[in-house]
Length: 370
Ligand code: SF4
Ligand code: SF4
Image (cartoon, rainbow, N blue to C red):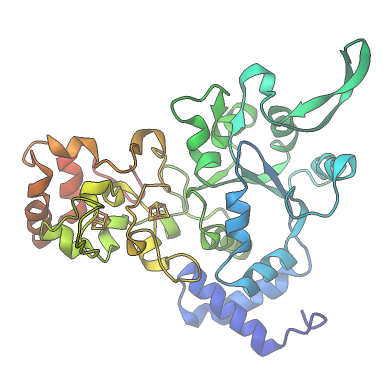
């Protein structure tokens, strides 16, 4: 770091930013600084591959709140392969994947962005070429290498697999209703290849850069997979309902809902539940962490939460601008109009979201369940 012109004071500042990122007390800054310093001796190798994705999670990562922290992470890691940002291309780049899998088996972290299409022999997503050749219009040529083959090659030697974004974690948009590509989430493929391999799911469409960087830092500092919920998401970022911390929760409790986007005089502080907000069933820290360097978040920008951190996104949480369907007819709350009263009563009784879940006819969640 000294060679790069980073002073000790700056380094401690980065450690402070790291503590903030992980939601840790400032008293732990010296501990974090020590852990980060120690890491410089052995850079953990990272292989970052992309499947059926839009590259949005990579772009989101490069837009991190704390560029210096990202720099440290990148400096402390040895990112050997990343199709979007690496300079090398073609056989040379793919060779790095194959060599790392052989030489550093058991040591590298595999980051997968986008899910894995399995239909038609995996031909919907290929990168690089197989070693063997195939006949093509009378010519022999090397076959395209499907992502399924790469997963078989890279998963066994990975120390851990990080599924980055909703699509990689849970199938997301590529696995929604009309999918013809046989899309499977990363954890399903990993289970078929190596049953006990740890998979960390970082939901989001895209994933928040803090969720990824914070998870990686936590893994490096504590040398273990962070505490995960039942969907394998780090609890430190996906432990609380959006609805619990939403700035419009008071409007919800008071039964004040925005009814129509074309409202002549819309009061944008009204609750967006009736226009499709999935905050009551979504676990993520967006209201407190916010996006784009803490500038704003979906509801703050007058858009309902679409539940992009949840396993049920996109398929089961769409149409995006329709309210959660069960609410209209659920037991004591036949009309969404009564939800405000129910919410207020529930809050007063100290059962808040749990009561709402009961009304939705769903199993009561235990941190990060939907
Ligand atoms: S329903 Fe959505 S907008 Fe309304 S309080 Fe909950 S999270 Fe906020
Ligand atoms: S508020 Fe909801 S839709 Fe917006 S980023 Fe967070 S989880 Fe995704």
